Image (tube, rainbow, N blue to C red):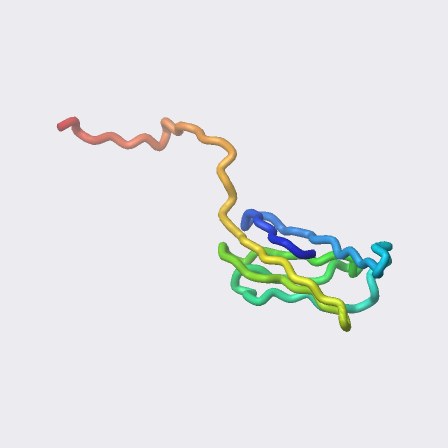
Length: 102
């Protein structure tokens, strides 16, 4: 889960958990574990229903760290939540305002 994640405040991010042994072999996730955000005013974190990923839900724009731990295993990721970028623009004549020319 290491690294950083940037996403818009109208999205929800699902980050997969990848468990490896000393040889790099991927294993199924152990049962249990916890996910947490160090700033729940920016985003909350929870384990998915199957325990195989962390679901990050934005609350407000800002930055926080999300962590996962299960016994001796732990990792974290930095998260930045920002407003969504506009995808289009339109001129709306119905909402036009007028003023006297000076």
